[in-house]
Figure 1 (cartoon, helix red, strand yellow):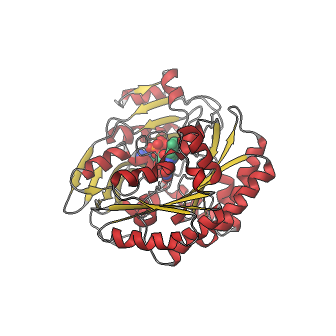
Figure 2 (cartoon, rainbow, N blue to C red):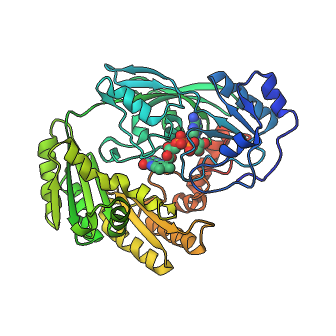
Figure 3 (cartoon, rainbow, N blue to C red):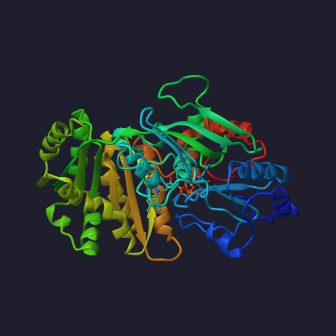
Length: 457
Ligand SMILES: Cc1cc2nc3c(=O)[nH]c(=O)nc-3n(C[C@H](O)[C@H](O)[C@H](O)COP(=O)(O)OP(=O)(O)OC[C@H]3O[C@@H](n4cnc5c(N)ncnc54)[C@H](O)[C@@H]3O)c2cc1C
């Protein structure tokens, strides 16, 4: 994080003179935008908040931030869990959540044109009204923004079939560090003109530019979505079954796995009885015109080692089968604080990853609850601890999880991003040469280093 320093004299006045909307130095407002959901607390609140009401506010704020060399932390819903939106002393928080109009939803081109502050679930609802949907579905859809999703390249349950945010972004409007507005990409489904600047900004965590508009690909709403759930004696056999689904070249639209400890907590908190069915649970869905044959084929693969299996016959019974997954995080959070980890391994190494995650928990004497977007090899080991400072054993277990991901040929972040939390580990993952390319790109786009310094790479 940047070294604590006050705002330069005259900066707030310059923002006001420039006519920038909602410039605030109110301590209550500043405290509210200093943190995200990572639990990281900055050394002090940021210096000033701008709640942008238009693209011109963003351009003016960035131009002045460049002039005064003030660090800028773009902010959407503040739901990030890697500390990427944490803002410390001397910084300007640029809140994009007020730019929240859905400008166009086109049923023929199957695109949406939106402002960055649109809440993800609102876009999904708007697309649904014309028989389409925005496929990336982070569990935080009700509280995260499209701008934040783009900046973190967010994922979700449906990504196993439809890809992550990057696969849904066709073009972006971006304000660069000096206030210049550029458009990247296109509104067509195909297009190869120029370098892929859109892809460069996706996942850049606010370090290369501020997203002020996005053209997004929508997909037809599937006519049918069918579900199957299966229980296994242990988490390794469940993980093997998930890998077998991939090996059988099936195409689930969701493939999730929950371990015994997670099931136990869901049962204790919600009064359910999932743990009675086995030591791990797999929930799969298939959608679209071939959902019936696809789910039958997936059920056949999953059924081989299962101790229990059930197919949802209609929307209500399917929703019931998916409930354990939906309730996992909220149930675990009722027990105290959790460090939410997010590693991704090749699917062929999933069973080994689950076994070794449990060993890491035992070695450090910490409680790890594991669930996974198993279809993508993306594990979320959650390390529980008593409210208060993060204990050393939890930090050490987290480090071992990252080391494990790299050892298995995976990555230290499947979808949550690097932020403040994982910078050192990113460096280990990509190596010094690739890191230096990252830094050259940063310097080219943000020569003064004002955009979200200290985050990402
Ligand atoms: C309960 C819960 C469940 C979650 N589930 C998921 C999940 O399933 N999948 C997943 O991927 N994540 C998940 N997350 C993490 C988080 O919701 C995502 O990272 C989300 O994309 C962040 O969006 P946001 O609008 O809240 O961004 P913020 O937290 O405000 O910001 C995140 C990053 O984006 C940057 N940023 C925000 N807006 C812009 C912009 N317009 N231009 C440039 N940079 C910008 C910020 O500077 C920061 O670097 C979850 C979080 C919670 C609390």
